[in-house]
Image 1 (cartoon, rainbow, N blue to C red):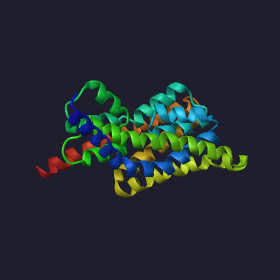
Image 2: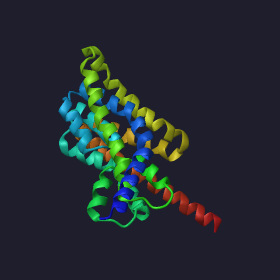
Image 3: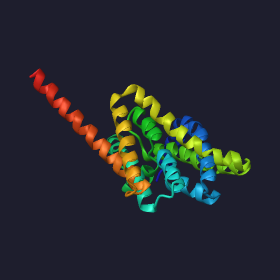
Image 4: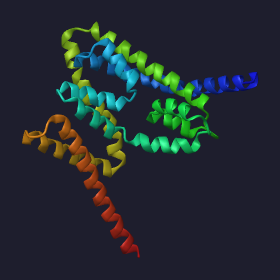
Length: 242
């Protein structure tokens, strides 16, 4: 390996870090909140940090906290987070078309750090992305998420018990905050949210299905039903135009 090659790779890594700086800053309040909520949910500091280290997915981690608080089983939590993160298959496939040819193990490593934010930055980069660039981009984003999760937990430990318990309300506020912009922009999301809420309420009222599986079934059922309705409407529009 020549000196020129090493310097080039280092420059790509630092270029990626510079590009990911805004992500790292944006992750700070979200990760801090996650740490605070995990403390109020009953997770220890090591458990909070390990979840951020091993999962590194904001929405999935917040949903996991909600399910843990409800006493949901492990299988339901895994299945629910899988459905939530299924979009990563599409993001990975899209980024692979933009990535330079490289060793499979390198792609496997940086694919772990693929989030909505890192994908957006990488996909908007001019030209092809290198492994060095992705490592730099993900390193700073990942570090911010993990460190601030731990800091949030430590801050939560110093808060009064009543405040810690009330932090569980912030979990639902976070989900509403994430959902509201999409509801304003896309009518389809409104149908999905309403149907999912109805299906989940029916599952809970039945007392036959657990909370975790109720969320899983409600998510799948609402997504399938709305997609069928939209496909039928598209077919009608095509026939009308024809």
